[in-house]
Image (cartoon, rainbow, N blue to C red; front, top):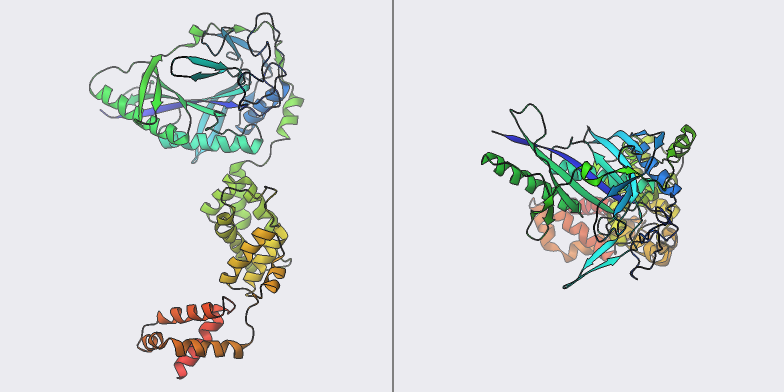
Amino acid sequence: MEYFPKIGLEIHVELKTKSKMFCSCKNDPEEKKPNFNVCPICLGHPGVLPVINKEALKKVIKAGLALNCEISEFSFFERKSYFYPDLPKGYQISQYSTPLCKNGFLEIGGKKIRIRRIHLEEDTARLIHEKDCSLVDFNRAGVPLMELVTEPDITSAKEAKDFAEELQLILRYLGISDANMEKGQMRIEANISLISTNNSGDLGTKVEIKNLNSFKAVERAIDFEIKRQTEILKNKKKVIQETRGWDDVKKRTFSQREKEEAKDYRYFPEPDLPPLEITPQMIASIQAEIPELPQQRRERFKREYQLDEKSIEVFVQQKELGEFFEKVISELPPNLNQKDLLAMIKLSANYILSDLLGLLKEKKVTDESFLITPENFAEFVTLIYEGKISSKIAKLVLEEMFKTGKDPDVIIEEKQLVLIQGEDELKEIVKKVISENQKAVSDFKSGKKEAIQFLIGQVMAKTKGRAHPQKAREILLKILNTS
């Protein structure tokens, strides 16, 4: 009997707001001083009154609209009751029966992954486990938290990873969250069950893997769990409904506890917060703020610039780099014909994605220390395209532009990097190279055509890149074929 997986994801995202969800404390979970950004509300003292963060509400609605969701015109908060040291009041303010967003989807590889719900809640405190005790830091308590739940439409570990990566990108484009998994700003839980090929289609026993904190962990944990459950079922045993963790060192899941159900949380309406009425005007206002999203950018870059998919993906993943590229294109010479324009677009993309990225390393084009303007980069590309500088000189010029921010023409003049224009001057250099490399000359004349490349390299070295390679080739061939 064969089995195939049905996977659903639950993704928690810390929202980027100035204050926490229900109080005016600073939203800064990374604060190094423990229990610094706290007050009686986020410490869970009895008798305190929470107040809803409107900005957090708008951000969740914006995410819902970007993910094709229906927005609830009426919603309210509820108490989700459970006891754990990171939640001293004994309940979390969350949503269950009336989520802000529902029935959406995100398209991955041409397939629509349905989104069941997106709701808003408060984050819990952080537990720090020492050797002989556990400590509680409330800086994170009360941080606005968006929870997204998919339908079990995902059928592979890779598809789950692709969904999470695309969601992270969308959240960053929207400015909702940095969604940095290493910092806990985006946390993923996967629900996995197996169905046999001769089953009626009902889901098998569901196992949840908690707190996956990297995309690699998501893929590896799901792959492992699919194999683990398959072995259990093939041995005629039953899969236990439970919550499991992921051991990134041993590369395996491990049992944590039996899985709770919704009834165990005893949801009931939060009496200290009013119900929410989301008006069509509010929805329209938020919709107008949604920028171009990753998939729209992919399609536009393909249509307008005719770049290959690999180049487009870099410009989509690194949004600021893509914006720099577009500014460069806007500064290219006007009135170019279509053929020249597309050639210069491709040349610009190549130099940005190879040489410039190599110089940037961990920096960004938006950093204050980045000195190259789009105008200067467009001028740099134009000089290359028009054959005024060689590829070797281009590297030197770009490095100097990166260090100083100077105009490429100024650098070429200061460093005396202008290409040798006079044919007589270049001819004398070529003759010298021929006289100094008789073995390569003999190889060429005996039929080893690759020897010409060596001789061209020698001309380029002797001129320090100031010779045009094609012109050097022409003169070399002319002299060699007549001598």
